[in-house]
Amino acid sequence: MERSNVDEYLQQGMYGQKQTKPDERRKFLGTIRERIVFALTQRQVRRKGTLPQAESLMKKNAGAHMFLNGNMSYTYLSKYIKLAEKYGIHYTMVTNKEHNTDIGLVLAYPHAIDKEEIYIDESQEGQQAEPKVKAKKKSFFAKLFR
View: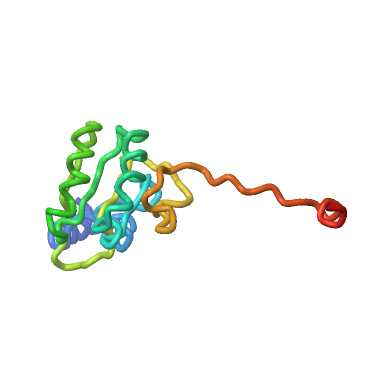
């Protein structure tokens, strides 16, 4: 065996296997950002208004996996666990005593999906996830000749 292979083997034995993006994995409950469908902060998990939006996204992404922050109270997480069971989504309670994150729930795939916006907008809480329709602006001449 070569010297570098022996050193590498010993390093893995002492410190564990090398991970890609370890800070990102600690923040997003063991997964990386490029795989996430949506993420909720702990504050959003405690609120009731985010549940309808989360449910509609769970319904559309039944093949994903849900990661729950194990440091949070089970009473807040139980609503999301029931939804996951309803739509056949597997879930994992992640408890990391060494690192505290503000993320309370993550729905992610095992492969990259590269979604631009992963956080649910707090201004739309309590509403279904639907696109906003902007009011048509009047042109300059329409304003001038009322």
